[in-house]
Each structure stands twice: as C-alpha cells, then as structure tokens.
Length: 200
Length: 200
Image 1: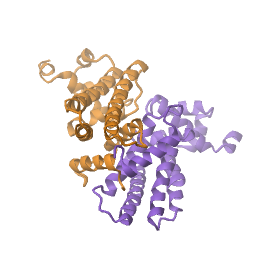
Image 2: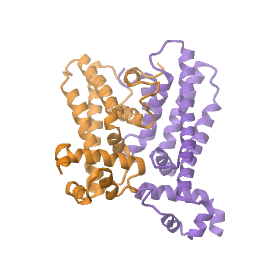
Image 3: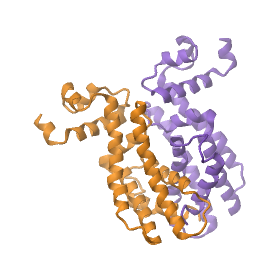
Image 4: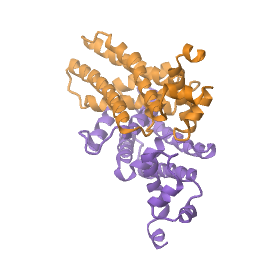
C-alpha cells in the first residue's frame, strides 16, 4: 500500500494496462493479468477501477488529457492575431502533436486512443466528443490562416483538419525510434507537406 | 452445401467474420459465432478455415488484394513517361485509394487491415511486407514526379508516402457516407492538399 501511495497508482495502472492491451489484445487481457503485472491484489486493483471498460475509458481520457495539456494549451498561449502568429500556431500544433504520438513514454497510451476497441456507448460518446473537439480546434486554425491570407482556397478547413490529424495519428503505425526518419525531420517535412504540398 | 457451392463461401465467410470482429472485437468472437452468423455447421466452417487466426490473416490479405487490383494495377497501366503522366498516376492513386477506403461493400475488410489485431508473427510479417510494398509504390510515384519537375524539394518521397497513406487510411475513423464531405469532394481536396498544401 505504501507503493500505491507513492507512485500515483492510477497512472501506473493505466500505463501497465495499456501495454498489456496493446501486446495481447484488450479482450484477451483479464483484470487478473493487470493486477498480476502490477503485483497488486485483485482487491487493490478494483479499489481504483471497477472494470476493464473503466480502465480502457480512462486510458483514452488520459490520452486526450495529454493532447490537451501538451498541444492545445500551448498553442492557445501563442498570439495568433497576425498572419505570422496564426501560422506559428499551426506549425506549433503540428510539432507538438507529432511529439506526443512518437513520445516513448506515452506511446501505448496514444495508440490505445486510435484503436477501435469496443467501449460502452456512453463512454465512447465522451471520447468521440473530445476527438471531435480536437479536429474542430485544428479546423479553426486552418480557417483563421485562410481568412488572413485572403486568397480563396479550394481546400475546406474541415477536410484539411481531417487530413492533418490523419497523417499525424497514422505515424504510430510505422514509426520506429531508431529508423532513418527522425522525429525532427518528420516535423519539418510534415509541416512542409501540409503548408506547401509534397510535389509542388 | 449447395449454398456453399454457389456463393463463393470463402469470401462470404471472410466478409461476415470481418463484420463480427469489427462489431464485437476479435477476441470476443468465437468460431461458433462466425458459423452461426453464416448458418453453417462448425464442421462446414472448419472445412474452409482451420482457425480464427487464419480467417483474420485472409481478411487482411483480401484487403491487400483489393488494393492491388483496384489501385496499384490500374495506376500501373497509366503511361507515366511524361511529367503530366506521372502526375496523373499519383492523382489516380489518391482517387482509387480513397474509393477503396470509403467503399461500402469493402469497409469492414479494409478497417480490419488497419487494426493492430494480434496475428502470429509469420502471418503478421506477410501482411506487413505487403503494406510496406504499397508505401514503397507510393514513394516511387512521388520520387518520379519530383525528378521530372527537377526542382529541389525539402520533402522526401518517403515522408510524403507515409503522409499520404496516413491521411487516406485515417478516413475510416471519421467518414460517414451521409456526411457533408462527399467522396468526390474528399478526393478533390485531398489531392489539392497533397499537391499544393492546405494553407498555401
């Protein structure tokens, strides 16, 4: 119990459960497996989370919290009044979102967010609502730049937001920390693609 | 048995299994569930597939077959000798890949491809090999255009290929056939974004 009191037990449970779910599948992982991996009694685990669904929901919520703290809140603090400021907001969002996706310590957590694991409808609606809010935030950044440039664009902010979120979130499917494409190169190139296209 | 002989039983099994896996999760779906949904005896099902792993592998292979037939093979038939031809190849790939992802009759099949369901290592390697071949095919299309334009680009064909495959594959996460963003608009806008950027 001393251990539980000192290392933020809920966060540790979520992190371990995320790793197990990712490695062996959500359905194939039992509450017993999670408790055993943490050297917790089953009672100790149930003290924090009532069910596996609740753990999965909190993993996904935690992923959204991470995105909010490390991406949205930082971008919001940048003054976007000028065109340069609005562009800086979008550049920062691309950089920070990529960093969250490739961050070694949060990788399992964010991967879980992108899986289509079955959550009870009420919990799923909450997560989907937060995902939609994020796309909407990106959409507004793009709309703001397009407005300030005052050049008509064939691209709607909505399609642009989906494209950007897709290309960044997909990174977890192929990214290897020791691969030839480093995190910094990825940030620079994805920014260039989104701003200017890949073959222009 | 007459029924099995007339409606391509293997394809029907894969389609039904894909739908069940997607709705209730891979691990939570038993071979019994699959047989029951198809009104097949368990023996009838095992006549075609020895295990659930084998079904999952064939669903994923089938998704890669669809991509090969309807995207890669069509693009290969376009003459890409000129810059205009090379660009037409890339435009065609974007259009056909999007159509495969949003196609109502293949939706479950392609969604399964994008899930990280646990496959035995040997089978997983085969699927991953085909996925890599696809990214490589896109990479070569981009490299070919960049070469023919003969203007140095800050974007590597590899990063561009990952970005494109990501933004298109991610569509299954949010696309609704009756939503405001139609398939045709999506094709046009994603093409514009990839060629010219979203805010340029």
